[in-house]
Image (cartoon, rainbow, N blue to C red; front, side, top):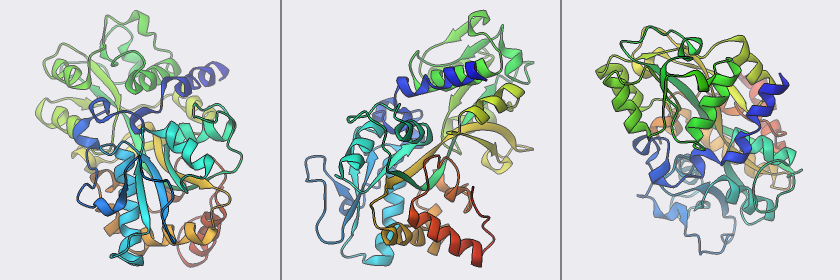
Length: 356
């Protein structure tokens, strides 16, 4: 267990994953690209003073072409529609990613920040890379936009059925230091699969790996991505690739030892497969400070839940978001008082279970 934890902690050193990468380096450009550019009123240019006037509040969200920015834009859109469409008070600030998001929030320059669950965990515990460097004791969790599941795609001619079968195979893991490589290594390490024993490791970008998989030059690709992924869908439906489950005792230890990982089922409907596939992933989350008024957090949650289907329609990556999971998945820092109070009402008047 300690070895698994030690490896997973390397994730904090590598970088901030999809939220911090420029558009050209996103896990999948076509999946992450939705900057809500048709709604310029939601955006603050980086040079603009951090705080808006009046009752305005700001979400630091990552690159304008990235997934975090789109998620924050969706949240602000539903909030502003209910509050006052003519005078938006929920604003999205484009940043370089999770590191800057955390620093801005910690300094009080913004009220909310979009970060992946691992960055949330490490920031609260003082092991994240961001400008201030220390743990953020008053970091509080608010909402989960969903999980980026780790996909294991097998070649149509491969006889493999799980990670255990890939030790002597040809596998796409991506460039050293990339988010794909780091997460794939964590899963392989937990499953006791040695990369050094593989016949060949493809370190090119994902399109190169997918082409090799479809042309039988690779036996498998392991990569995290949004759900559903256009690239995965093409490989599954046009190349005959298969999704392999990510399930083993080692994977269970990895998740149990590192609370920022979340188990997830890739639903059959995502890729029109015969059954759901078990895997793990990291959540994209919304966090804030303890001193942000609880009424503001409650209003933000109420805006998303007033018409949850409308909220999910804001971006393809939200379509499989579950109402209960949005209040639980990847929220590893203490809950904000506003979230606690919102949950108390939900438990009393709905089917949402009390969260631990």
